[in-house]
Length: 124
Image (cartoon, rainbow, N blue to C red):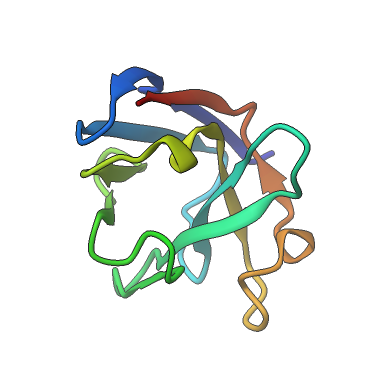
């Protein structure tokens, strides 16, 4: 059974940085796409970034492009989200997710496995 565990959230001032980690277990993840989603209070869960586990090829939402970097360490079975130049509007619970599907990977429903989430709060 795939398990995902996020860590690294916290409180940071606007303009600061955080690095989130997602420790994955229960599969080799070859052929999987791993993603980061976020959900602010009163809003729907939204796509932030994803990475092809095998190739390392990344893709970003426009809202985080140029500020966030997604990466993975296959040896550690861990995915990362380096978040720079944080803004108050980045405040949300951040979730990591995994899927073996190939299409529409910005949609939360396309992901089969989810972590419990980690809170990121950016103060102005």
